[in-house]
Length: 129
Image (cartoon, rainbow, N blue to C red; front, top):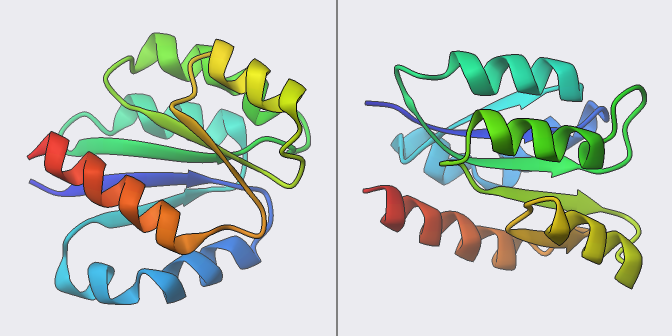
């Protein structure tokens, strides 16, 4: 069974950045990363990925149309089994509070600390195994 991590961000360079940081894991087949350019696309994919194990959603907060914070309670209702880590350039206390109240597991700030993110991913992979 394939293990998926869904990354939601409207910035195209995020995919390149993530693929670069996790290239060894992706080549080794530890997990697959799928990228959604918007919250509506991510919601659709979160519901569709049933035959494989969706183990984590990483979502930007500020996106055009539906924000990550607006998506969060919807995706948590549809997939309560999948933790969501929010990513934002604005890590203020109010944003953190809103994210955690709406069901986020954690909130990471940009620039992303990939060591912390790797730890979160490793923890989730161990829990899903």
